[in-house]
Amino acid sequence: MNEPTVNIDKFLGLRNTQQSRRLEPGALIVADNVTIDDLGAAVRREGYSKSLTLANVTASFSARDGRSFVVSDGDLLLIDNELGTSILASGLPSDYIWWTEDNSVVLLSTGHLIAPDNSVSTWLIDTPPAPAISAGSGSLPAGLYQVTMTYVVSGGRAGGAATVQQVELLEGSSIRLAASMGAYADGSIYISNTDGSELYFAQAVSVGTTISSLPTALPLEAEQLVGGLIPDTPKALSLHESRLYAASGNIVWFSRPYWWNLFEVQKDYVQLPSEVRLLVSHAEGLIIGTRDEIFVYTDQLIKVADYGVPKGATSDRDDSGVVWFWTDHGMCSALPFTNKTEGDVSVVPGEVCATHLIEYNGFKKLLVLSDGIGVAHNNLL
Image (cartoon, rainbow, N blue to C red):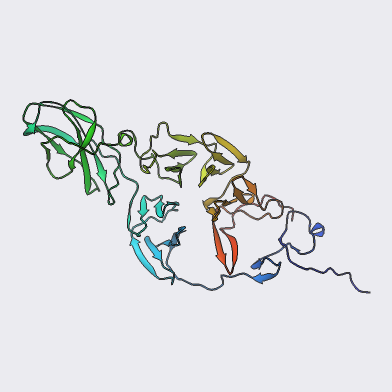
């Protein structure tokens, strides 16, 4: 007597959220190291041969313009299309690094900034201590003057202004300034006109700086008087609507518009119920993934899921602007928020993961790399 058979026209991929006897033909309860193509055929997955050998890789990032970066043994490397490497910077920490980008500018949570030409500087710029000021002889008219300074890094980016000081001068005086530069090579001095309140660029900081003439242009931006760095190392980053959003613990701070390094930390922040692990910009709002929940933030927090996300670089974006991200309950897309896999597949989410959208052999695939730690949300099988 012949055993009953079932013709399988195509494979459907992994299905493990219900008992195997209830699955439709072509569903797989094990799908290790296989890829299902658009015709339902199962083929061996790619990625079995090593293409590049590097020592102690601790971070990597692929920019939307095609550039690829890796941190290996503390060196920030640029990887070219032939898998050649060049060192862009050295001395990076071995801790986990968060990345974000905007208009081909890449920011790292370490404070490094990679420009479109691959030059490296910093976006984390300290606010200097108030310089020591005194009166000397010169040509300034008598009156009350306001004085401050900022640090300046390569590319002309400046930080927040030091506490504004006042100095009363007699006729025919100058302002002498002694600045503490720390690790910074360059700085800018700003002073007011006589008995004025607005501050203008006077000159660059130099040894024994003396100011003997009134400024005429280049006012100090208001943001530089009120903004400074966040009080902790950021644990997630996203550039969203001309601001940098930076998270540490359960707090998300957002910078002043167009000033990635200037935060009014006393008022420009959002507090979440648990640790923030994901920040990703979308045209309709900022997606915030925490340890326990997922939110969308516009001018208010809207919860979209009662489960959280692993740590790591768990999101990517396709050409249409849809954000794809890995969660404790599988792969989701936004916006609108949709869980794409929860009904069919349940796998261990991982404690630290990386997600990337790739195009290969005419197919678009979402690749998730996981450390395999954790518990699947549905343990039926």
